[in-house]
Image 1 (cartoon, rainbow, N blue to C red):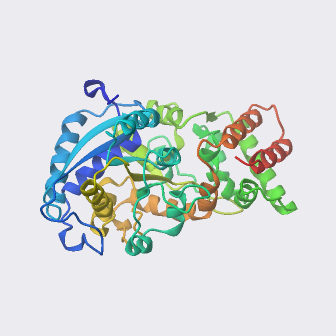
Image 2: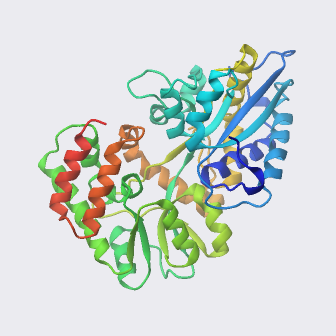
Image 3: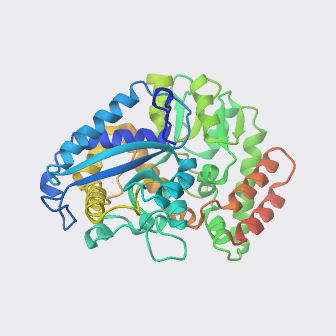
Length: 428
């Protein structure tokens, strides 16, 4: 069922969804919308039904209902400059409920035309046959990075589940009034902990894999996830990484958490001074910390740079659309990828990066944008790993259990490394 508006709460991806559309309403992209892209023919009426995915209810945003409605009125007016007879009807749903919701709606022919959701949800819906593949024009194929497109592609199928529209960076967030200096290396991260600063990290693999690159273990993880054997050097690198995780846990002021939400709560309430975070967490943290919030790239290490895994927000297309609605939905999806729109989203939000690789991000205008661009550069080495992690990948849950046993002292770094290799080499 749709969200209950009066009690509506939104976390990171839904803030992006709302603000993305608000930013679009302030753009003037008329001159560069086409680029060979489909537009609805003049004279055709199209009402687009849009579902926006909501992950959980971890915090409130005052006035969200009013702003969201105003946003869509504004975006209609802007989009109608090139598609004058297109209108939107928007509903919000928990992403966890979308599989069931779409199954029921599609069976009645009442499914949406567009969905603004996470990449993982888009893959799940496409795999179930509840959405259709978007048309990828030669222009879009040129402007979207091939690695990004691969992540939006169904495994072992030569078709896209959705169109990426924004990239979320993994960063370091910290309390500026509590940290004397920001750690730029993993060694410094443990040093500040030893001096009394509280550090929080995740045990869920995609949340802690950023530290593997710093210890030179990213190639080892990639080999294992691809089901290939590791050479001795890669096995040694993996042990260096697991030993560092053990050393981190020995520090009295380092705490490992099962979820990202635990890290955010810890930084917000003052029990943590430094955490790994995502760029779309920044609004939530700013509401709690204000000017105390600091943002930086994740620390590098003696054997390489950090290897964060970025996340994608995507637009998926419904299966119940009429021909006119299909044209309008494709036109809107292409409109969001317009370089002027992508740049405006990035500069206005300072929470996401463009997926249009030819957009120039003015890093000099913001320390946050500088950190995000550095995170994007760091994450280039983990793109293959991101594509190898499957939807509902049970290997990640098993690996989380192994890392948890390690940090609780129930396993050695050497044994954990070998167990991780066997677990990740298993076919998902």
